[in-house]
Length: 462
Image (tube, rainbow, N blue to C red; front, side, top):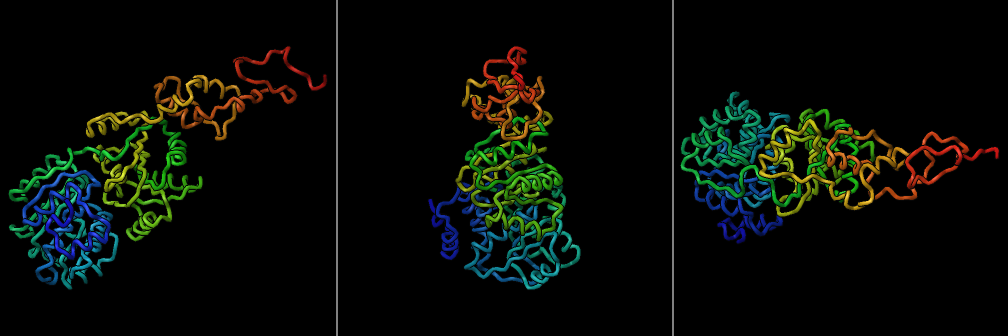
């Protein structure tokens, strides 16, 4: 099937072709005809499946006929974050370039004057976050009685951010005979209750089991002590064929500190988090898209809505507190049929959090680096520890060993990140033991595990 089989107009097909797309994704294949038929719709789709185009494309054709009126948008799209709203607006600009449609973007962090001016002139499509929309509505700057099409995007994220009361309030101000489209990655009870109240005989579409991760993403968890997370991250960035990566942290302070550390170690990185104003966040995101930087350190403000082509890796520097965030974080890679890799750092304190993630996704996430022991079977973990104690000095600065009682496979991950087994070469083991006197001969350590006997000492005066 191709896009022409979905009943899209010639102008729209031309824009889709120029954007480089020929075959619709499963969610687009199922949703676009339903939207064209003016049906209410509930679509459950994991992130990265092309769901934005599944409502943007048919909306452009529907809105092609009709006229604009001042302060009365003809359609409304609600998004949970500024970044996602801006991403949807970009899609409208790209796909609607052959149509005479006006769009307004209502988000916080930018001047309200230009937004009010656009509304005064009349818009066909209004893309908004709930907070800014309610602010303008209460000021009398917008009327919703002429809105015939409503899209509630990322509904489960709306729930997480506490926007459901605002959405219910907005829905009551719209015409009752409108068309409503609800998109969500999961379907928790509050979202089902919202759908039952405000959607009429909706068509239900599900292209993947709720909360499953994209099968194009190879997932790993990395057991690591908190103090070694930065070191392990740098090792993976240098060795795992990383082209572009997004690194997620749970706290804004961690984002800032980690980005500063990466820059100090020579990486080309930037940061995006909630303490930055909207222009600064957009500028940093654009640097990432343009390839000026290839690593973006982000808080969960960027977990949804970032659609950057070619992201090869996602790193969860912190195991997410909420399991749903895991699916949305790693969904920044493996998009549009491409493959990607996702690493989640798990400290002993994250045991419950990673269990909740694995329960939600329906399977154990493989532990990374077990194969590194197989690369050099003669180098047992205890042997590596013993040789380091005899004075081997690796290229990296030595670190404190993992606790003796630590789980064996976790200990192996630490040692693999600290000194890879395949780098323990015999010639590097022939160093003077620590504490040896200046005139003492350099003796090979191989095969000897104790102090140097007195009868082997050679005096510098003899």
